Length: 320
View 1 (spheres, rainbow, N blue to C red):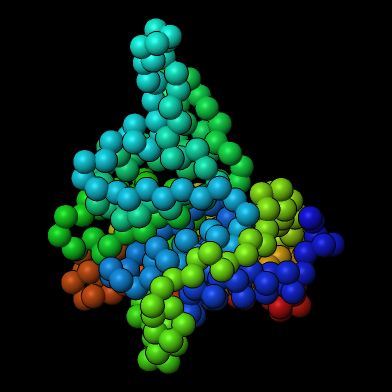
View 2: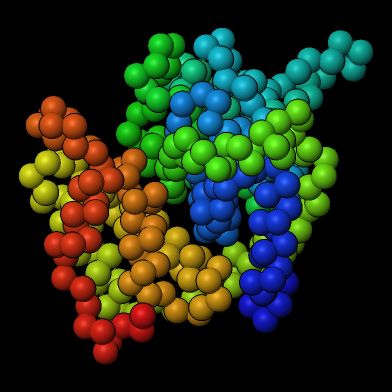
């Protein structure tokens, strides 16, 4: 499946399947698909019981890919994730026991309940799509995406992810509570049980790989690239930002905007694509000053201000 075969109707089928279990959250599901096609990873943070795990499981069920879930706890070891060598007394030989990381879609539930040593065991897999076990490198299946959930960092029993690991996530999403209408619909639709078995798979791993290639072919005008660069530079000069976004963040927004444009049926990126993604792609990468935190300023507030402050490229140059 490629550019010519892709259609909004096919994508709509995926949302219809996910909607059998998930009420609302259409934007969040579209963002997760954007991350998958951009070959990135997603961190989902919110209060317990807001549907983080259910949404991820429904999304994974809509894709014809291998899905594995890890429930993080303080006693979880790195070997519980990547695997290790096991001795077979019958053959007097060691054999490789592959861990749950060898999958297509990896749900790491409550990632900040695991110890930092265990959290860091995911770094190689997230960055290089491979793991090294006892000096031997093993490639991971393709496609590969980590969808991690975490509780708010101020909750008891959590171990905050370090900045270097947060930067490995393409996006950070916050669900929030559903509206009254959505919550009433949820009770009527999935109040008794969650019908995951009713979800049909839409996209195969081969189709996803083809779509990833198609997304990379989306055009980005020079003015759009300059706009992303100007936004990144401004974060590094903002008085309420201690550390601005890294060049990796600029590249992440550039690549994600191409995928977002493709999912909206275009072969070129517009300013609206950049504006739509700057918060989920950059909000976890900004480190605010003490003054900003004391005044209860959030990363989202700073990014919204930047969109108003940074000059927009000429309209006649950039297609909108």
